[in-house]
Structure formats: C-alpha cells, structure tokens
Amino acid sequence: MSRRHTDSGPVETDIPARLDRLSWSGFHTLVVVALGITWILDGLEVTVGGSIATALHESPVLHLSEAAIGAAATAYLLGNVVGALGFGWLTDQLGRKRLFTITLGLYLVATAATATAWNFPSYAFCRFLTGAGIGGEATAINSAIQELIPARYRGRTDLAINGSFWVGAALAAVASLVLLNPAILPPDLGWRAAFGLGAILGLGVLMLRRYVPESPRWLMVHGRLAEANRIVADIEARADAPPPDVALPTLRLSGTRHGGAGEVVRTLLTTYRQRTVLGVVLVAAQAFFYNAIFFTYALILGHFYGVPSAHIGWYLLLFAVGNFFGPLILGPFFDTIGRRPMIAATYAIAGLALAGAAQLFAHGLLDATTQTLAWTVIFFFASAAASSAYLTVSESFPLEIRALAIALFYALGTLLGGAAAPWIFGRLIQHGQRASLVVGYDVGAALMLIAAATELAIGVAAERRSLESVAAPLSRA
Image 1 (cartoon, rainbow, N blue to C red):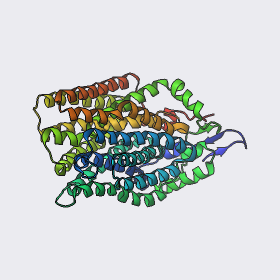
Image 2: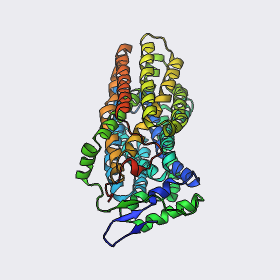
Image 3: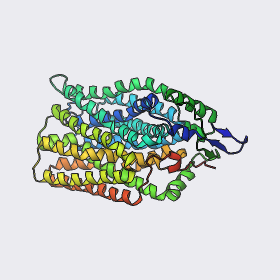
Image 4: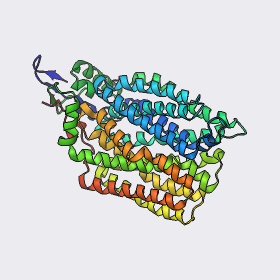
C-alpha cells in the first residue's frame, strides 16, 4: 500500500510493483479491446483514404487529381501531428481517461463530416480534423496501455495493439469491395458511405471505455494516492489476485515535478539525449516507409497494373493480413529475445526486402498479384518494426511527460518522414515513370537500414522491466 510519511514530505508507494506482478486477466483484455480500437479506427481511416483514391479521381463532384489525393493524405497526417501535440500535452496534465474520451468524440464528428465534402478544400479540412482526433487518441491510448499492462506482457501487447491498425484496414478493404462497386452504389455515394464506417464503429467504443479506469500511475505522481490505491485494488480483484502478503518494491516520490516545458526540454535533450535521437530515427524511418507506399497503394495498382477501383479491396485485404500477423507473431520475441535485436532485425529485413522488390518493379517483372505478395512479405516485418518504434518512445521516458513525449516523436517523425511522402509519391506516380518511383523506394529502404544500425548502437533494453526502472519518474525523491 502507499504511505505518506508527513503532510508535506515524500510519498512511498508500491503501486507499480502491484500492477506489474499481475497475471493476464479479463481486465487486461478489456483494456486492449476498449483502447486498442484507436488503431483499428486509424487503419480504417487510412485504408478508406487509400482505397477510394480512384473513386475520388472519378467522382463527378470532387474529381481530384493524383496530386490532390496525395495532398489530402498529407492533410490527414498534419492533423495527426497537431492533434498529437495539443492533446498529448493535455493528457499529461489532465489524465489519460478524460482525454481518450474527448479525442474519440472529435474523431467521430470529423469522420462523419468527411462524407459531406463537396470540394477539395472541404474534403482536406475534414481529413485534417479526423487526423487530429486520431493523433490525440494515440497519445492518450499508448500512455494508458503502457501504464496498465504488466511489464512482462508490455512488448507483445503494445505491438499487437499497434498491429490492430490492420484489422481496421481489412474491414475497410472488405467494405470497399461493396461500397465502391458501381453496380451497388453510385460512384459519388460509395466513398461517402465508406467514411460512415468509422463513426458507426466508434460509437460503441464510447460506452466500452466507461469501464477502463484512470491510470493509477498517473494518479500516483499527481498526489491522488487514495484514488490510485482504490483503482489498483479493484484491478487486483478483477484479476483474481489477492493483495500481496509480502512487501513489494516501493517507489519514493516527492510529488513536486509534473513535467513543465523546461523540464520536458531538459529531459529530452540532456538527460535522455541518446533516447531522443533513437526515437526520432525509428519513427521517421518507418513513417516515410509506410506513408510513401500505403497512401499511394491504390494509385500504383490502378496506374501501373490497370486494377479497377472496385477491385482494389482484394489487394488491400491481403496486404492488411500480412501487416496484422507480423506484430502478432513476432511480438512475443520482443519480450523474450529482447528489444534491441528484434527491432534492429525487423527494420533491416524490411529495408532490404523493399530494395529488392523495387528492382523487380523497375524491370517490369511484377504484376498486380506478385507486387501485392511482395509488399505483404515486406510489411510483415515492417509492421512489427513500426509498432516497435512507438513501443520504444512510449516506455523510454518518465511518466510525467510520457504522453507529450509520444506526441513529440510522433509529430517530428511524421513531419520528417511521413507528411511529405504521399504528396511526393503522388507526383512521381503522376509522371508515370517506374525509375522515379524506384528512387523513392530506395530512399525508404535506406532509412530503414539506418534505423536498424541506430537501434543496434544505442537501443534500450526495456524488456520485462518496470516502466519506472526504464525511466525514473521526474518526481522521484
């Protein structure tokens, strides 16, 4: 139990140890389902945005060019950045639970509004707001999940949840086969109906999240120990774990430092400088790698292989399956073999595989099916690598600034590696030259190899360790 020694003195608590000692239970499954839905929604949104690319181009109302479609994808990513930064700061100040309710509400309104777009500016603006909701969700959700899941399950759980992005992608791919079929819905109605999927899926989540508590770790460093202890006791009861009958390791907190702007700068640029460099490299490399290919996936299939928009979903479905099973199958090894070797291996394999596939594409040796199979294999590893980037930044920094750190790395990585990629590749596709696209692919492959080398050099061995031992709280006495 937590003990306050004096009215104004330090606080000693065993809350982290009590949470980390638990076995997997129905409570932890609830956390994964209720909070992991964020990545399903993100996958749904991104896949809808990609799979309807041809439909947007053919829409009699919008009639967007390839460059405009790429620009709208960039607007979504920029919204991710703005939402992550703004809501990330609020998540650290106001709590995880309050913010993951607000951000889900913004997402629901914005994605429904996208279906009413009447021109490019209105479509891009709604995509920006949708991205802001998802970006804000990511910071609150990743913080809460890290702080509620026991240490020995943290790596595989985080990878599986981030990989659930592709469950949303698969749902969107299947739905697109119906909604984008002109024999079923008119061309200008199908893509609008596709955006309604996210709003419908998200409505039920609002009710489910009522049963997810505030993070006891966040309450702990904000002086709300009685509330934190009540929540931990409830979690122990739901996990059928009796209160500990022996003394557990304790943490001594001063309760005086809650991560102001100056503290954030000192922590990132001085205390954990190497971890900051590592986080930027990992997130930026995977952001360029993913966004360059995925946001233009439908355009490449349509432009170079003549795949009609109504059939794109079949190819996206196979691609989504590979991306989902990568983190799911490889995730346990991040907790057993370890973070550093697994992160470096997945980044390196993905980079080398993309470079090889790019040469096959350049020489016209692939068709729509074999191109999709190649990407499926590549992203089996790349999906685990991308998920591990967010695992790294969310467990490598102190609790008081965790959400903002996730937001900063997400924002910086997206701006450096992701926001421009869809627009750049959209322009390359519009030029119609395979050689130009190969250069872009080779850049993405090189970034992944640089990230692998960086991980080997300065990676953090965080497997099976409590968050407080990986990065001590700023308020530690």
